[in-house]
Length: 205
Image 1: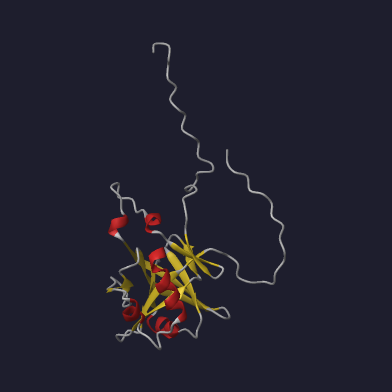
Image 2: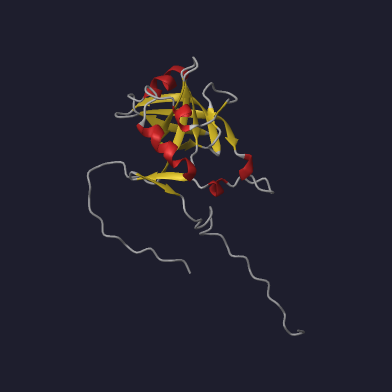
């Protein structure tokens, strides 16, 4: 029997962003002239399956903002618990002052379609090309086409299934970095019919 969720008494706050947890990703960019940078982004996600499209929202004051505007390209690199320090560092340090790749010892790898590098230590790197730029207020949203995805070979099992959740994924929730925890179910489990157990005929045993 499933565990019943209990009602919670709520208090009302002013309007704000409270959709948590979110993926804390490392976005790698390039200025097209040899300068690369990494910024941490939590305002990111999927916007369309077919064609595959994603978005990131970036403050115009960020060092990487002009690079994205100039090249129209970026790479979303998914992060793991082992990368928590790097994720935080890339969110609070500016590429104007420090070479984050060098400072953190992260490995650049060339992409197939975009000029920005991907990060070898991340289990998934998603090459993106900006399709639409929308100024929203504090942030500018870049909607991008997914050009291709690079996935870590060590997370592919013997049945050729990509087991991303075994990588120890990192999420951001209300100012804190957290692991994703244990698996509670998989897609469709709430309506899936249970397999009928094979009845054993004990008359002849």
